[in-house]
Length: 393
Image (cartoon, rainbow, N blue to C red; front, side, top):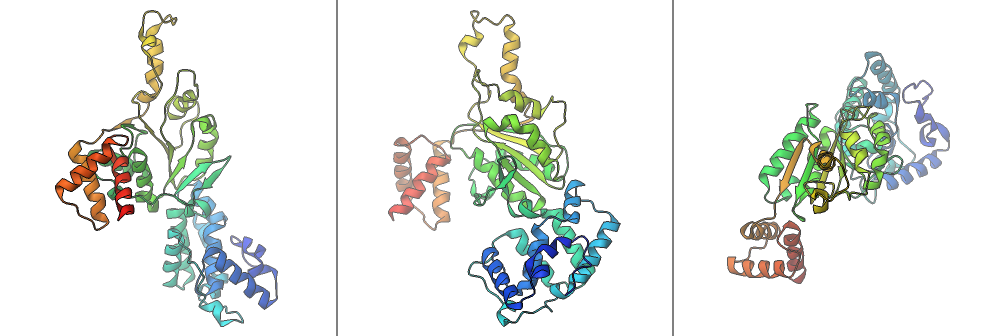
């Protein structure tokens, strides 16, 4: 094929399979190598092309991100011309010397949800206009590259995808119906482009605060929600982080701060206050901050701070400073330690999902014995008991 007429997809010419090497057996070797590395199946020319267009940035995918899901008609038309050039590959008309290249089955299939959905949709279309539309809708919904591949990220001077993100869903969290309702209502509004609040999840340890935030990302991933977890020392990089996320306006990001609290001597909280509200540069509309803490007031305050002996001349100003950070979270969700009945119900539900049902008295005795020898009554303790019980069977 002559791909020299490509404009938007001209980066394909840098790929040896499409524009570099001429030896057919070398091409076959490279395709099989990529199939095993990426988990590609079926016609490898077609599968590899779809993978490259889904993952490598091009002017269409980057423009959609920069402009919040919009694309100009002229740019769309140029992209369609490129797809017309590539149409024989999409139709599976380009075959190699090895028949296996048309029906290849890798050792391990690609597990990425967005890529597999795109590949399935493209199986049902063979018209250039429909293929163009399918790719554009994919870019709008999932993005491209790592943004489409990963649900969660960490920060190391740039976004780094988390390969093994926990697959927990909200239905896996037993109890706390009111808390989940508050979180889903706020997050649904956020992904729909409506006004939403930064969230502080506060309460007893082991009650599922962090798991709730992770579950939200899994629930709303297909609607463009992503998570970026940062640490307390990284708060000073928030302006840089915000600027990086501003480039992906068609996606929504939760910046996640887990188990957050500050001692009086720590000043990183000032960066967070400025990022949430009050800085010179506004927070991007596609970013919210969700934090979890065991303390309602994130900055530690002692009785000495309230005594008449403190050196601060204007004591009320000092008090306002310690509580002002918490006040900047528009939604505060409280997680309370479960009652004994709720604790036992959590255990019962977890065991039932594993096909195990214990009689009431046996469940009560074993569950309470475990609670007394561990860190108290909460969802984490219940999960630890279930793990122990299943391991001893």
